Image: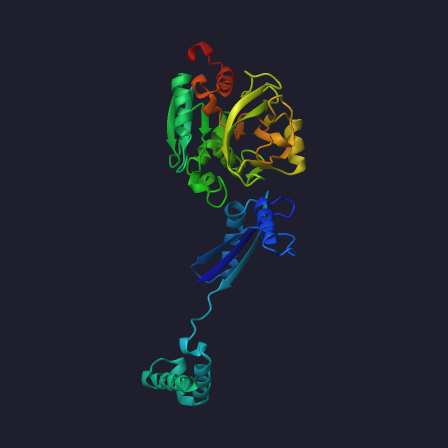
Length: 136
Length: 236
């Protein structure tokens, strides 16, 4: 899975009435330090496959032909390969410690790489949950 | 003369154009659905006003990829008459059949009113029934009618007499107050270099019968008929 983001914004040389209106509204709300605003679009795409170069070549064409009009707009295309799915418990600080501890032991390492030894994984998770409770 | 009126999802002036051509000018007219790929032998094509594809992304940006568009481009290449009104003008620009692009009105307001429009010259197949400097009363109804192109393109448009209509006051003077959308150089309608593709923001089809308040727009259609040698007597 590849995620792409296309930012389309009005060219600097073209007057952007929307940006002008937004800028005035911001100033009207008392933030007079804002001197310019530009309103564009953010288009997010999800693509099958994982060949970033191929995807970029395809999307550059789409950006020029459909997503932006080169007469009035510029675009920035950024591509990201999908990140591996994170273990939910690992995102919590208390659980992180538990995972680190477990990782230092050879048995737990195996459990982390191969989900075969389900009981051991469960134990570490349980331990993490207990630690979390204690932490609270 | 045989006409094709293209219907995109979101077109809303298709029936008005059809009515003027069929009932006012006694022409043969077909509706062509945007998913068709043939114009059924039409001599002239009209892309009517409306909000094709909900104006998503940009006005006309998605309609330009409709299956009928290759046939429209082919007709344009063969020198057949192609007329884009309002959203039709936006589609022709996006499709590259006309230069430039139409962006949001400078005022950010949707302008729906009848305004004076000046004829630049009668030496085109769309304006032969008018006079140079003639001021027409034509309705506009758009939020994105601000014509934008680079300076070189604008110069070329005037140099090659591609600008047929400009926004003016009722005396034919172009003043800042007479520009309803901020269009560069007050441009209201332009042709391609060959002179057979015309796009304009005002709605001539809404001003083609006296009962509707103005018949100033009818001259655009009768000009096209005259250029194709269709006797006007045939037009009812």
